[in-house]
Image (cartoon, rainbow, N blue to C red; front, side, top):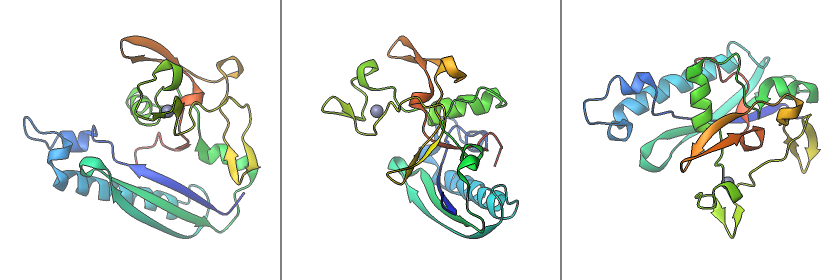
Amino acid sequence: MDDHVYLSRSHVIQMAKITSLLLPGQNAIHRHDITARVFRQKLKSLISFITKSHVFGPTRCWMYSVEWQKRGLPHAHILVWFIDKIRPEEIDSIISAEIQIYPLTNCCLILLQQNMIHGPCGTLNSSSPCMADGKCTKNFPNRFTNDTVTNVDGYPIYRRRNPENGGQSFIKNIINTDIDIDNRWVGAIFASAEQDI
Ligand SMILES: [Zn+2]
């Protein structure tokens, strides 16, 4: 494993810090002044969390770029180099690609379900925008694996446990159909995402 991590921070427009400042009839895309300021605060807090609180260990340096998604919502791509290399057995404590029912609060769980779950697509939802020529362009669903595996084409295969092996799942309603969502549909997330940073 290398000595750096790459992570993205997206803006969640349902944040109370944004919605509480909107006027009647407005939503976040109408108020770039508010979303930009809240995003800036959250980004600084996240960088500080990593580089000053050293949640992953001492950092050597870091950089980021901010991009704007459709309708102007910002997100940041952040690259952090650490002084010590991340050992393979430490990956699961930094990056999670699994549904975490606990110890998240209900609020955080809902946010993760809304923002870190892909699709579903494929045979469960063939009209999903990620579909092209009958296949998911993002290569979902991932396969189940009980352990994180490194050095496969340079990219780790993150642990995504089957419900029979301790993985969590929840029900999501897609086009009036209840679908059981398991770890195959989770995007890799910052393992400390439950903290309000
Ligand atoms: Zn897909």
